[in-house]
Amino acid sequence: MIGEIYAEALAGESVEIEYVDGARVPLEAARWFEPIDGDEEFLSRCSSPTLDIGSGPGRLTVALTRRGVRSLGIDITPRAVALTRRAGGFALLRDVFEDLPHSGRWATALLADGNIGIGGNPAALLHRVGQLLRPGGTVLAEVAPPGTRSRVDRLRLRRGPVAGPWFGWATVSADDIGRVALAGGFAATGCWTAHDRWFARLS
Image (cartoon, rainbow, N blue to C red; front, top):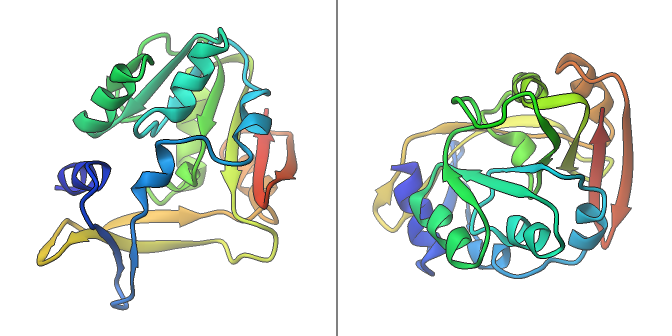
């Protein structure tokens, strides 16, 4: 159901993110189709091959492919995978915790657009991503600005009267990424900012 409602958002339907306290905010999926300010600073740090985790409609996967960086997007939504392929990128219908091709050989793993929150347990996610990387590989993650409270929310997607199941989603602040990275098996971190977005490099 999560994937079905997300697919509707990618198709332009009105979808909301609903929190357990009843608050709702629009899921603005349209922003993931076109380049976003700050993407260039992010992509320029990618090495080949790059795994784009939670790639959505594929803007980053496609951008990497066009600049000659071998890349693969993975997403749990068939529509997202189809959109990536249609735009000229390579993508598979996969969960990051499932078996993935070239495990242990990826040079870079991307967790853009807040995808470090996948699963609601950033340390566990980073531990898994570490298994996918080759020795010396790096994670490039988008994080929340300094001063943001790191937390795990319970939320679900809603389209009108239809709501999906509750799931956990984490927010990790730039203030806390070093601690989270260490818990996930990464010893070194470095942060930078571009166009009001914050990023971290984990190795």
